[in-house]
Length: 294
Image (cartoon, rainbow, N blue to C red; front, side, top):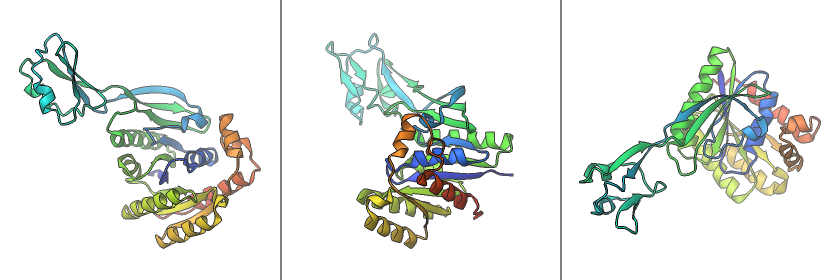
């Protein structure tokens, strides 16, 4: 049986998405977890994984100039559209790896064959064990590319692990926004839970994300976190989401207990099992998993 895959998303950072995902990890009877926020992964801070295997990820390639072969003609600097070729004091040239897009044009045109291309091997993905189950996660070095491809890679592995072990659920902690890694964390999932907050940017970004999930035709529900910080905006957010046919299945008040739990590296459900937020999250989890839209 194909496992049910749920992705938790937010239109912007700071909504509490990962805290919600970690709480669900503690509530799931049996699941594989996947941290799809590869550019700024933090689910591991609460799940405290014990890494079982490490795998390299080739994110792209960069040009490198051999100074011993460079004649200083400057052709590479002339043709580089990304201004990645810079000049040394001795009139030779070098590549800024943060600007290089790996297009290979400079290496093709270099008359001295002084430029070669190397794969970027600064990124890794991991299979880890946690107190709640298996976690598949990754680390991307700042400035690296192909984060969407890395998300697809770790999601494929999470599915493989779930299938091999007859695990019925996969829970993805998705990245914020609507960019490439978000799309990679959406394709083929069964459900989406959108975590929103009552702020002007939170409203705008949640509705933008809602439009995206609707275009994918994925059943989407939402929760409003910290709703009591702006009840009027929370009401407007709920109305706008309902207009997109996205049901708000829970509203969680602001509570410093989330921060207290994070400080000691626990989910809120572990740290404060009788807190109002914990009880609300338990109810939200039940409402999310009992539905079989697909």
